[in-house]
Picture 1: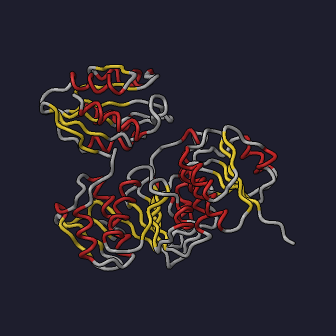
Picture 2: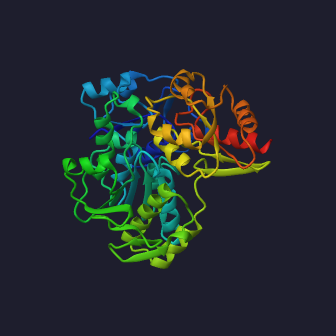
Picture 3: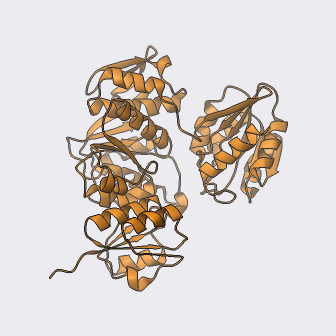
Length: 446
């Protein structure tokens, strides 16, 4: 009798626990190992399916005997247990790769250094509003594997980080969207930009001419790398203005999509404002158009979308000062977009865990738009080194409460206070959501 195939899942967060449930119901010998403490809700989920797990350690004897390992995206590829698995030739895949094997649903996959969460949420909103049976998965929403296991959908809108793409091999996106590529997470890619670029382009792997690849036509890195990656999908480039190659753009204050079905909409009716959001709306609109969603449904959803929490989120106006939460800006390019959209003089709160940032990109905008800077981090030396020569008032703070009070004191009536940190949040906060929530709490207490 054949022995049951053994699947070990490393990491028991949203992704890992979902993969474990799918593996179990598909009849695999399933085991979950997490080096940290597992959250109670994931323990409860695994208990429901009678899945064995361990926390606070990786017992190699229980892991190295796997036929295949599903690794959570947060675990680096050079973690000791992962290196051992690779040395002995055990396949290490991602939860998305595993889930993709067990569903025939159409996959709309979105990646990019910036804008992917907004684009994913907006695309999901259009599909959902049109009455389609659609799931939201990947970096946001529920684990794809858990949805494939428990509530099957016809379409999945999936936000993919470079870490998730790293361990995808046979997975195929029916529609792949690449918003842009700017330096991010270089600490995970040996500070080698090409490795990061290659990870992003993995979204086009296995695509056929029947599939679609949507991308920003003016991204210098995408343009330069397009031919190198041998893409088989049909191309759908978008741009801010009408230009060679672009099938979607703005002309005479109208958002225009030419393929596959002609579509137009007044730009001022879009729910999201600013150039970066124009790109997000174009990418989502093309995806919906390709899926055959009716024009009136696309127009309505692009007009009534509510936006994403922690992404240029207006929190409150206090004594004429507008407070804006952009905690999701964990890299410099995100902060550039935020500053570019500011019309008032701005007190900028930035800092945290620096992933090899080059602040040169925002230097011009900081000089032009900022009244003052608040550095919020345990180590602000690099920020001082770069910005101290700008002649702007600077405050160093180690808690969100102090940062909010300092920015409030430094701002003048008619100004904006913008939390757009350029950095990861793990030095002082659980995650960027915790950082943004604290910001909102202290602003509302002013």
